[in-house]
Image 1: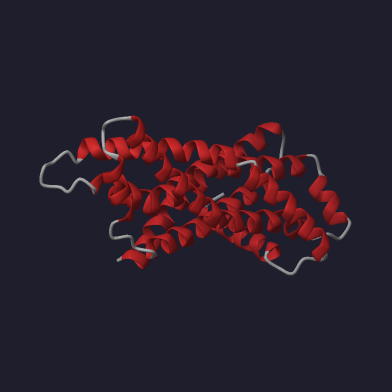
Image 2: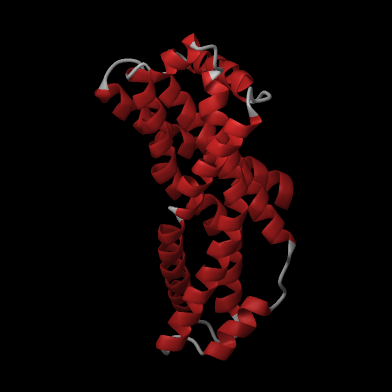
Length: 246
């Protein structure tokens, strides 16, 4: 199937998904279930990644900006802006595309090959809206919180590297993360994360929904979901950056 056929089928699926639910009560129940699965169950790995990335960024920034001309607070400033501009939105979403995207594609793909989706259609249920919409909304809702939590924990990881090593003093690091702070960067990171969350959830759902065949096809759908959502994240990262920061 060529790219235009995929785009057309994806658009049709989103047209069936993004409509008023048949039952708000059931949809809300599904939303809360997805919120727990996507949000709370992802939080531990988010915390671990952010701590280590903040610490690593601090150390590498200090080593690569070792220059008497640069002020001592440069390390903290660069670490803060790097976390806000790229890691907590783009890099984090690329990682979550592998975890959450593959999980969504596998879950829906398994329902397709076991004919559960066909059963929903026979009962007159809009299966796309019932299965996909709660996942998309849940992911979009939690991503801004992921961005803020990841940024804070990443900065804490940098603080730990300053506290536990002699690569930079704590006072210089704290001065750097406070110096010339631009609140717009937080808004920029949140906007990117919301767009990326929609891409990951919708693309993963698309490949899972059309995973006809057997268990091998579910695996292929999961792989395709991760690869294509990652490529589109990078493409939209370029577009959004040009629109919002240029």
